[in-house]
Length: 225
Image 1 (cartoon, rainbow, N blue to C red):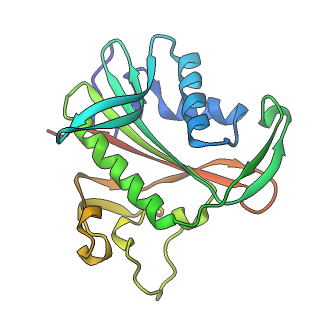
Image 2: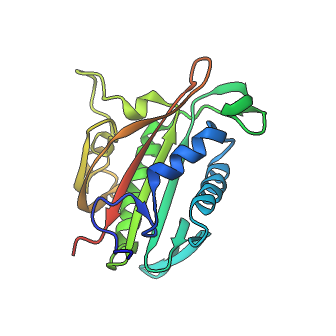
């Protein structure tokens, strides 16, 4: 019998553990061309493991009189999971062939300099999932995949405070409460979280050359009442 998701649950639609989907995905897709490529490939891997879970991309939700979109909504027989993806890359160019990439392909990832905005948007994903999960049969997962070590590594001791310091997402960092951007001097970026979330980065793939190490973080979100 399937039970409803609980806080900290990494199960998708009450059916499939996220770790199983990631394991299947990385066997054939150690790297992706884009965030949309990641979303589509993830949905396919999920369907291969759980054919009774239906996936829907870019599903609109109403909030404060406007539409916001869930990257992926996974609908199971008795539970639903919303997944938000972030794919933030530094420059990497190479070919993936053999068992590590099916079929063999060439990749040319662009470098993105704005790690502060990557953190902001990831935290906003968590807040969006909290709104979706205000039902006992729903849970959410905010997933970040990156080859940018600055996102998972802690800041260098003694460095000047940055405007995004309350939005840090490095290993073991805790996100909770009201997070201020630049000490609250830019209110539109203020973000409030109802839950408490500790970041846990895990290996995804390792490819040749600089920027070839990919890690992912998955933050589970659920209704805590």
